[in-house]
Image (cartoon, rainbow, N blue to C red):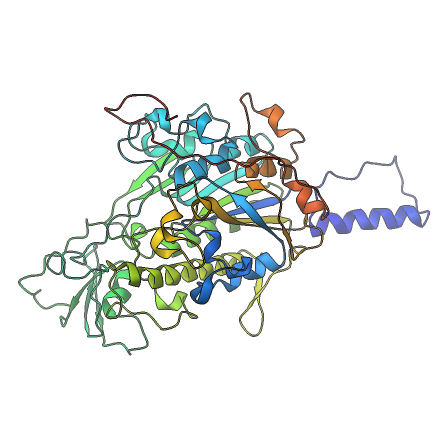
Length: 509
């Protein structure tokens, strides 16, 4: 493992002293063992390789992702990586190193899936593996590996599976778009969940506070979206302190896709289910995920390695506009009065915007945790040698059919075992990478990440540490040895049907 800058300087000084014939009082001592690297693991939801300009794809309308491109250019791009066709089995592959036939998880978990098709508390997961090596482990954002339904642990499943800290959503999907925009309008009024026009009005909050909002410039977000991003419910052409229109029934208990979500916080062994009326559960989900990760990483004590999994919900459906401040490169500028969130055609453009917003927040995550900086022109300046942290970025499965970019096929996308359903981007960057800026074309599977994380933590034989079959092959040799030959002779993916309540408890063939 590579030492931190401080340890490296100390070791260099010790070597210089020996070379110069220097001596010290007392017996010679062994050099301190370098601390294993921190690990930042970033998961993108429904962002297949077809979306990634940095991998040579994306067509004419690739989502802008300059921050991930900067990291990719400073690391290794694995261009032949397979995952599973849907999110839960794909994520189970990351965190257990095992194919679906071993976990009974064949498709995205839903409320009817029994514990038989969820990760078991007996599974050897990445956080359990790394905890034995002295790591602290946290996850932020989407979980979707077990529970809360049909599981004794309920919302505490992240804790049961080894994470010390969790801040996010145990279930997989964001809620549906609330077309009443918080009860302020009739059902079906607004397809994107917010008032989409640029009129003045009042932004009401669950604690009774209210903020008058002036008419914004057309270059800004619609007033309703601005209010929603603040956690409020907007009523157009209304002023605080005056009676609400007769038709308005403010309801702060409604989920609203990416802006109002049931939050679970696990810390210190305690699980808190945050109600929708709490300000912490209200706001743009990608920003909430990033803020929580920044707080935890910055609070880590020196001398203790950590692994932070930032499991972004984006760009999974329902498609819903991100705040414009997070999408500076999208063209044309998107607004709720231009695009209909129920339209597949508009959805392609909205997914691009959501993906760009995720990339923007990823860049902020790196900058605010000291892993990168901003150049004078605003671009990300990332030096993988500047910190003892490995960054891993991956997609959980292929893109949803409507969003697939040419020349790939829309029907053979997420949910299928065809190329566009399982071919995902994988980026690894950090001080371990020799000859950065290159690509690896050899076959890789997302189960291989399990072994990579263990080896980064200093575990020499990951397979020997797990009392079950592990399907991982090595990844670390590709980082350290540019000429490394392929470590796989076959690749594998699998889909099927989970074991559900009321259904025959048999695994699919």
